[in-house]
Image (tube, rainbow, N blue to C red):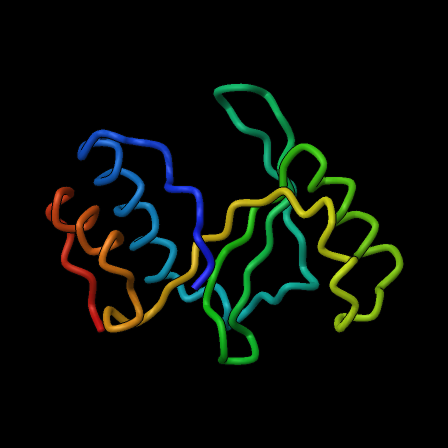
Length: 125
């Protein structure tokens, strides 16, 4: 596996709030009515910055939310405007985003499980 940059250190309270929001998102099952070609514009209330997000999972393979920021806004707008070859890995340049993917517990890394335990979160699956 590639060596990834670890996530920023957050307090267990912050992790609990994020995990509660993710659980609410999962309970809504937005992939049943939305797909990745239905972008949503969001404004970060703390910074006033614009984000573009979309839901993955309509095809039943990957269940996630993706939020684009900074250069990622230009990237997703270009992809939505002119769909390109999905096999061309050069198209990933400029993809500045946060992806929250819902996976079975058995697919989580050891480091993920440590964070979940510290936040007293019990994932299903």
